[in-house]
Length: 274
Ligand SMILES: [Zn+2]
Image (cartoon, rainbow, N blue to C red; front, side, top):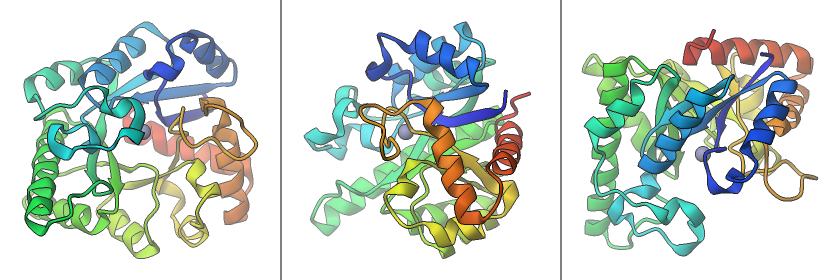
C-alpha cells in the first residue's frame, strides 16, 4: 500500500450502505484504512470490518463525548447514539486482542461541552481523565499505540501524559486532528508522540506547526465522513487524503511524493502494519 488513512470512520452509518465500494476504491488507489471506534458498537464494527476486509485495520476505544454523563448537545450527531457510563475494560480488551486491532482510541479529553460551574467541571474532567487512564492502561497491556482525541484540553493531556511517563508507563500514539500550538506540538513530540494531520488544515492556520514537524512524526488521516477538504461536497472519504498530503507538502516546501513516502513509513511503524 502507498498510503494509510490513519483515522477514518467507515464503521459509521454514513458508510453503512456502500463501505464495500469505498474500500474497493481505496484498494485500487493503494490506500489502507484504520477505522476508529468511538464507543463499543462502533469499535466492534471496526473490528468486524477489519477482520473481513483486506488493507483495513481497527482502533477500539471510548471517545470522551460518549461518556455517559458528559451531556453532549444534540449536534454531535451519531456520537450520542451510545453513551457509556464507564469504560468496560474486559469487553474492550477482547476487541483489542483481534489481530487486526492496531490501536486503542479514539480516547482523550474533550472540554467543548464543559459544564459551567467549577465543581461540575471538576467532576466532568476527572471522569474523562479516569476513563482515559483505563484506556491508556489497556494500550500498555496490549502493547498498542493510542489515538488521542483532544479538544480544548491540551494542557491537561500533556500533564496526564507526563505523569504517566514519570511513573514508568510507555504510552505511544498520535494526537489525531492536531489543532494546538507549536509549543503544545513540541510537548507531544518530546513525549514521543506523532501528530495526525487532516482536512482541518484547510480551515485553520496550522502552517507554523506543519512547517516545524520532524519528518519522522507526521501521519495523515481524513477523519471521514467529517472534515472534507474544500471543493468536496457531501461526506469525506479516504481517497481525499491526497489533498491533505499535497497541502502539507506545499506548506513544508517538499514534494508530495516524498511526504507520502515518509508519512506512510511512520504510520506503518506506529501501528505495526507490514
Ligand atoms: Zn474521529
